[in-house]
Image (cartoon, rainbow, N blue to C red; front, side, top):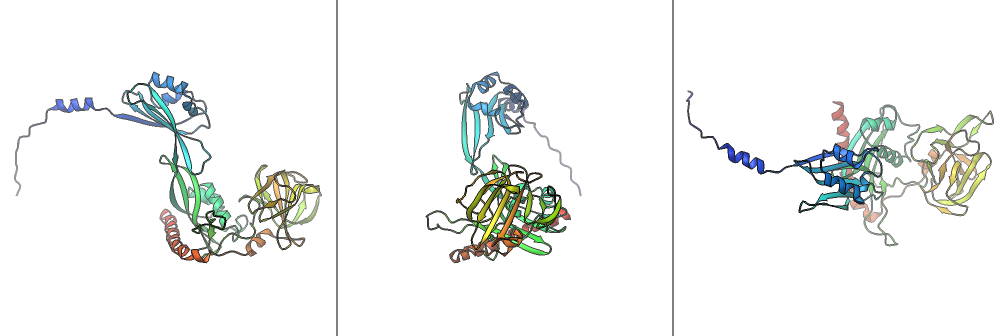
Length: 404
């Protein structure tokens, strides 16, 4: 049964409501990006600010000049009254600091008269991101497809460089899972941090890595150095790097080739790494500079002597950054890529010799010994490694979800 009930309702008086609304003051927020052609007036116009006093202050204030300085594309945010008068303007400033960023703030004074400016310093907020991808053509194509920043791709190639030749050994269908750090400023991701853990499956074989910094301090009183380890605790740092430049295209391998200048076939004893002029060239291992100067077809060249009769050669440099007798550490920049000597274009010619005999640098890197996690830190490492396994499994599901 349905029962109908009729009841009179007295409407609320409308005037108190309209009075309340008229007394309410709200703020308008607008965000835009700076442009190379900007003036203070055009910036304010795009931010929908109509405030002559604000314009005068911005043109005269020293701190405010940062709005027009530097590169275009920086985000600038304004808060205004409902009458489009400026209340607050903020913009993140450029900085080389990896832990802190600076923020320009211009604000109307509390009494409503005039403005003040200041530059604040604040820490980046770190968060972890999980992602994954599958190789179809190249590592960078796969990371682009997965919206993974280039620095993460480079780090992955560096981490697994002792086990995987990313220039010649990638296969279609190879896949990876990665957990990496992003640094945020004012809610915007602005920088990529360290790869925290990663897994790469190459030709059916899985390689895993995690970042770990042992607790405590070393003999000098400094914090222990962190590094990448396999999930069973073996360091991925080898005695020798597989490449004297960060991950890049390779132009020729360890083989015979037709020499473009001598016009005859000859053994190409070494590896040529294609890179633009000015790219840093790094030593693949600790050692001492044996020669640094000009030598025939090598052009500007550096010879580094390592332990056990090992020697490396870095040729065609545009600039040499070391001198004979200098001690160098693995990864240290010893010069810049160029096209000196008999080079037909900018690249780094690299050789690895053992007792004077040429060797394949990739094989040398793979054969060099690893160092385990210190015994005292192993319980903590195992605990973290279990968490890493869960993270990598979670990252793997991202691909499955996207595919479905």
